[in-house]
Amino acid sequence: MDKKIDVLLIDGNNLAHRSYHGMKKSDLRTVDGEPIWAVHGFLISVSKLISKFQPKNIIICFDSEGSNNIRREIQVTYKKNREKRSEEINLQFVHLYYILNNIGFTICKISDREADDILASLAKYYKKINKSVGIYSTDRDLYQVIDNNVFVINNKYDVIDYNKIIDIYGITPKQYFEMAAIRGESGDNIIGIKGIGERGALKLLKEYGSIINIIENKIKNKNTEKILENIELFMSNIKIAKLYEDIPVTGYAEHAELSRNNYNFEILKSYGLNKAYNELLSLREK
Image (cartoon, rainbow, N blue to C red):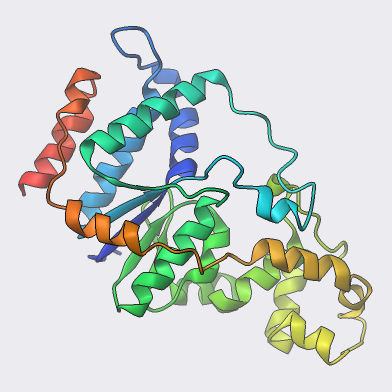
C-alpha cells in the first residue's frame, strides 16, 4: 500500500547499520580505498522511500554520544551487551554525516538522546499540526507511536499502520509498550518477566486492557500472579520501553520545511556514488 505523506522520518542508526551489513559484500570504496558501501545502501533506501511515499519534508534522526545514559539511570545494564562499533563502520558514519549535511537533509542528533525518542517527539509534533508521518525503521518500539496519521515503514517498504497492529497483535499501538515491558528485549539487555512472554502478555492485555490496571486493582489469579510477583521489574521495564515524546524538536521541523526544495546531490559524484546520484536527482526533477 502506497501513501503520500507530509513527513518522512528516518531512523538513521537503524538504516546505517542495516546498510553496512546488507551491502558489505559489495566492498564499495572511495578512490582512496575508504569503505563507503553503507553510505551507498543508505542513500539508495532514501531514494526508494522518496519515490514510494513522496514526502514533502524529510528528517533523519541519529543517536548521540551518551544516548543510553538516561535509561541507564533506570537500569545500569541497558544495552551493555552491545559490541563497540568497529572503526570500519565508524569511518562510514563520518562520511555519511558529511554527505547528508552537504546534500541539505535535516539531521536531528540531540545530546544524550536516542533516535527512537527523537522520532517519537517529532511524530507527536507533527500530529499536533495534523501532518501525516511515515517512520522508516525496523525497530518495533516505534509501534507505540502509530495512530491514524502516523505509521511505520519496514525494511520491505511496507506500511505498518494502526489497523495492521491490531491485525498482528490484537492490541492497539498504545498498549504495545506494556507488552514490550513484559516480553523484555535481549538486544537491549532488558530482562522480561519469566513465564509470560509476548503471547502471554498479549493475552493479558486483551483481557484486562492494561497491565497497570492489573497492578493497581490487585487482580490476582493464575494468569496474573507472575505480574504481581514482579511489579518492580515491570515498572522498571515500562520506564525503559516507553518512548519520550517531549524532546524540543520545533527547530528541526522548521529547518526541514526550509530546506526541502534545495537539496544538492553533487557531492555524491565526488564519492563515486553515481547510482545514488542519478536516482535522487531524477526524483527531484519529477
